[in-house]
Length: 122
Image (tube, rainbow, N blue to C red; front, top):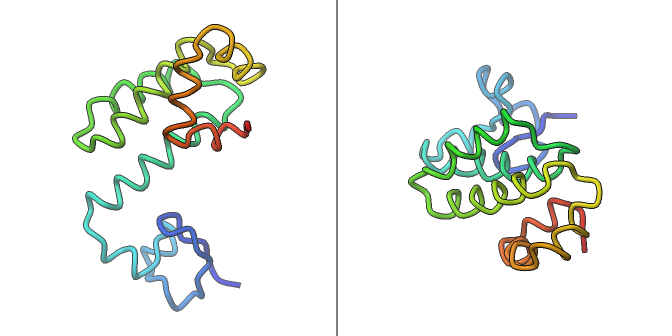
């Protein structure tokens, strides 16, 4: 059956995981990656997951504010976009509809960054 690697997103056989890898869900190949690259992948996935939630909580908003200050420009850009969405409409229900009416620019930004796919729209 194997395990799922949270970095590369593949299901790998048990032999491809070390003891720590099993616990952390990171395969041997991904464990060899530089720490900054792994953190970048995890932070990007974290930001995409915020839009999949039914509500972006205050705790999530404070985390996004920390990610805005990231050294990685891509992570910072994604965090700024999701933070703006969270401040306009934190609840998922009718979020895209409200953004289309009130903040068309933000909706376009979601499309350009690919975050709209995480939301489940279009």
